[in-house]
Amino acid sequence: MKKVIFIALLAILSVIAVISCKNNKTDIYGEDVVVDESGIEMTFKEINEDGDVIVEIANHMKSDLQEFYARAIWLDESGNTFEGWGGEPDDMPFQQIDKNMILSGKKDDFKTMLNIERAPEGTKSVEFKIIYAKFEDKSEWRPEE
Image 1 (cartoon, rainbow, N blue to C red):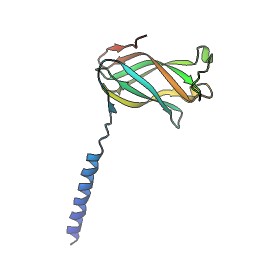
Image 2: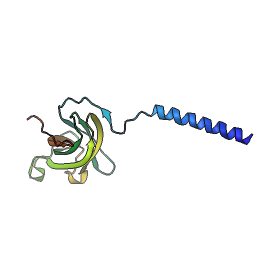
Image 3: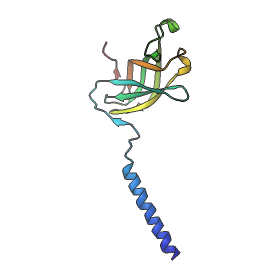
Image 4: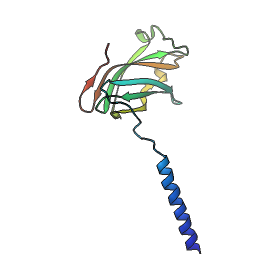
């Protein structure tokens, strides 16, 4: 009798595991986007509890994103910049290199190396202007001016 109950419980657990796997279709590499060679999109998402700036990056190129150079423009609660901060009007150029940070044809959240501690006091969000991107296949992309 104990053997029958054990086998029945094992069968039920197996069915539950199969069903939960089929319902969990989360792509660990992010959402799909169109690969049309139009470049890279970077959008501010949030500042997390550690003060890290989180962005969403969409890679419309045919190769995986390996590095980018961008300008971070610090914004206050009203979306205004902090003029004259750091000798430039509110921006901070930065570079980020991370092998396969966003795969070709994918869009996903990405934690940047920027932290709110580097920003002017009162910063609530960031606008990004990509200057340059480099890909796994050694190709490069610059946004149109």
